[in-house]
Image: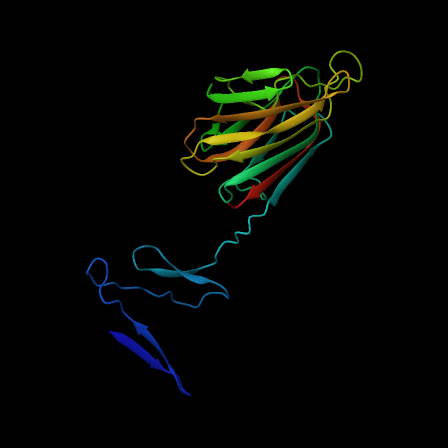
Length: 234
């Protein structure tokens, strides 16, 4: 069956039903009660109800979420869904850029934990592997993931001048029913002012929606650092 609409000054527009539906049953589509906004498209709920929606912009570019700058001692740095700029449900991949990070005391590692709907996840299921200039390390069964294996510090002399820690962490698996994974590379100075590099990969077998991430020192507090979170649509 074809419905034909004639234009006032000539020509027409026709709506033509298929020869047969897949299920050989009648189909009914219910139009929305009002027009949508410019650029919107019709979306079905799978039951024949149509509504106007705005298509997401998928341009494969990083979108800056939020920056936290630490200038005095804090226990940890957190990015949570409750923050207005942060949304761990919209983007599929995230990058966390950390620069100039120093703990308040010497010889501490930088770690992370994730949050789900029930709160901070601290079970011993974090799996971390690091390939460092001092060898390879497998840190499985921890209660937190690791960004670094070597201790970093804030001394200007002595045996632990591990200052100005820099890293970029790529995070995946924030969607529901996905496993959280993280990988990246970090660098910092040793007591001879040589640059040390290490590549890390870690994750946790947690199949639930992730709502946040916490970065903290294995001991003491974080004294300095800039932390910026970016999101990628695809």
